Length: 328
Image 1 (tube, helix red, strand yellow):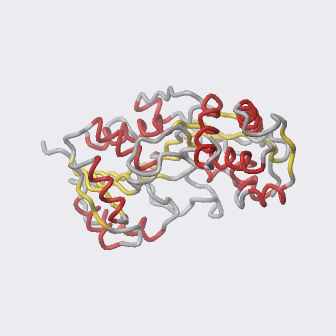
Image 2 (cartoon, one colour):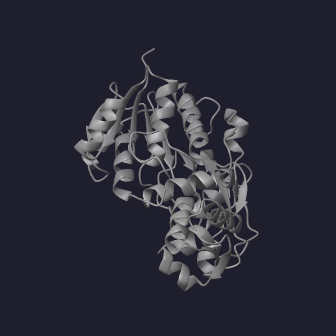
Image 3 (tube, one colour):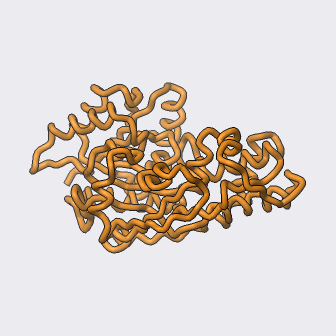
């Protein structure tokens, strides 16, 4: 049996780069083609993955994407989940497949889909009771209101990570955003802060644990679907437990103070307007609730995330941001 042909988008990004690393490590014999938008990034990727075929183009290169999907067996779409043109091109490429030779699409979304109550109320930093899951609650996840973020997407096997953290292993970007933006903001203003009451709850996932779920879905796809569920039941929340954002905000201030980067470990509650001045998306990324439990990947695929928590990695995240700001 010939090895599967795999097409991957987002290879030089945080998620896609780590997925590429995980899947190529597990299956060096698979045939990989990767979409890369610049020669500089293509050269770097080629130096680290000499057996991968570089496909030049960005997410608007719809004819290129459609042709790659047409000839692929498995597609990992790890780039911008809200980019409609690329999703449409993937859907068009899928029409060239047949029931005898189906396309297995593993699509990346995100649990910002679960922020609807926060957006409707426009009140941030408070805890909301509503929780979701990808097992008993999968039908609800697949029928979220149209105004939910990330709602326009293909539905084959959708992986939805919440707050992602930890060092990526790809050839490009190797860090995430939410906690990293927070650390940078505290270091720049020289003082810690809370978004509202700081009681809002998200779930978390280390990027390397998340890539293991993608890899297991790829294994299932390569075996004709395996134990994974697809289409109407193909929704996988990728998380490893909840955390409270106020705890992270306090931990960032404490770590920065202990590293002598700010004069005090104290945090001050700030208004929505003050948070927005610090970062235009601050109230959303640090003050909202995204509560969704992952059961499907664990029950069906034996996925067992085991990396250290976000709270444990806050000191190293502060180090990363201090170095980038020239403070360390």
